[in-house]
Length: 171
Image (cartoon, rainbow, N blue to C red; front, top):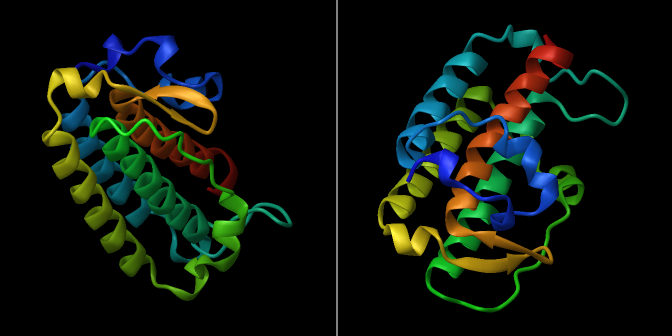
């Protein structure tokens, strides 16, 4: 599946920001490439920046990496449920509540990046099992229609969105 095949009807309007960050690519290949690029990018950030937040109440780089993992797990779970033709509407999640208790700042950057890589490898393995027909399946998450393939592109775009925020506000 090429990322450009995605239709606007396959995702909630607020995900357009993430989807617009993903260039034309094969979905599974871009899941693989983007995580390696992100990890390399984060490894080149100065050590004193990992626990830095640019304003009161804003997340640190470590918090954001944890947020990316939590979100990816949730998006992949949604993809699995929809792929298996589960018609149950899937609830949203409160990202700030997750971040507040995740404890990312007590972890090493190495540990966080290792876990991120493992999470992505699991996501890749899952998406490799989806046929073209399964990728087009639509379910409901957070009150909006979403396709399995849109969830894959959202995972990539969400990561790219936060990488851009790192560059603009943290470095």
